[in-house]
Length: 203
Image (cartoon, rainbow, N blue to C red; front, side):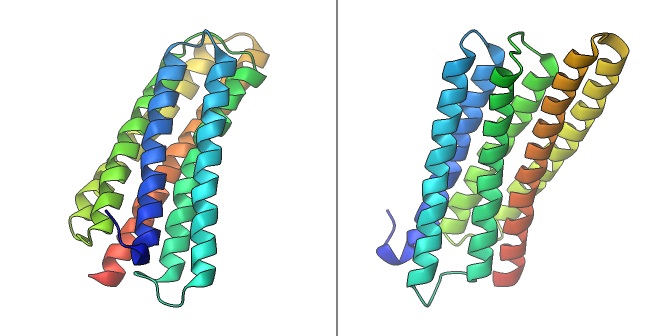
């Protein structure tokens, strides 16, 4: 599908595909927390897989002189994608650390936003690989809209915590997870912003 010289686009596409897989796994995991250890283990494996792709891109950047787009753009986009995977894995690990085994509607809503964002990012990276830069913009806009929706979910969740949760330890646990998930949606927006920068620089 890709020529050898397009190893950067190929690896970025692999990262985006892994992002979607992780977002699907995360969304399924927070719906049913019966086996938290298996859930966190699978998320860690996907995060490690993404780390390998990041290492591949770093290695290739050190080997080649000419890159298909600016090397700082490749690095920034790689880092932003990796941050989304890291955010999901860190969020998943908290269910095990805090022994949170009950379904949380706010977390489920966050997971849906992250999953939908991941699909938009995947489509945008595919368009980048095809050099269809201007078409990327509609996906960037959609990710930005989803991040705004996540801000609303966060505010609603925090309001409900302080209104309904009387156990301070439980409140701290839930608040930490909500904050980590909100940061993960920010990371999705960072990917969109990096893609927008590439579009502006190359079109």
